Length: 325
Image (cartoon, rainbow, N blue to C red):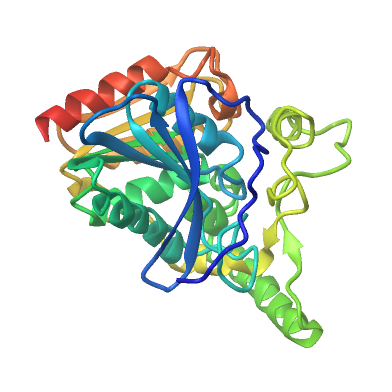
């Protein structure tokens, strides 16, 4: 397994809890990529614990939202890991800042591999949480990994849909997709000639005066002290632009209607991308599927607003469905 140079000091965007133990860990996926993670466990815990793996949002790192979620769940008695996906943050993988619906779904499954091999984990009680773009990856992982007993998709953002159809499906036509793919393939040639990849996406900076509310919402989180982190792609210019080609070509959620384990989809009622969660929920089947809309909440409220994120509900959801699995 590739050795990573992991930061030793606490460099999260949230304060460290005195109720949990924290350590840095590494594990690998089936593509041979070593992933970096933070492990949070309740102090003075005994026996085998229920475990949760957390990742997201897209372009973010474990020092942001996923770490906050993991630490909060550890305070409630779970062993939780927050990991950087392949090619991102402290995790391995070359080239940097690439995304793949296949590999990033595999990252969740690799986290389950790791948790399933720990002596302090109850291997029949493993769940996952995906935030924003990784909410779709989490549901995608649950569709193929029967070891995952419960899944939470928080403020889900469907990366394949937005790349293939445009924002709010405004470019959902063969002609529009052709022009998008044509431009991205031209960028591939430019990148090959330059020997480096042009980055795109991320958060616009400086913020235009007439920016839509959702753009201001992202800016407020990623470009201010609230959520900025030096290793976050969203804080620093974005990811490899041509990654969009794989998202267009490989839609996620194809077999989500066959997920037998429990799934909770939650979203801010006022979030700009709420339609992603609602549509994803419609595909799910069974009485163990829930849709939770948080009154008055916008998209990034579910990134870090501990006064809004319903952690009590998440604890109840995981415990109930772990017991019934």
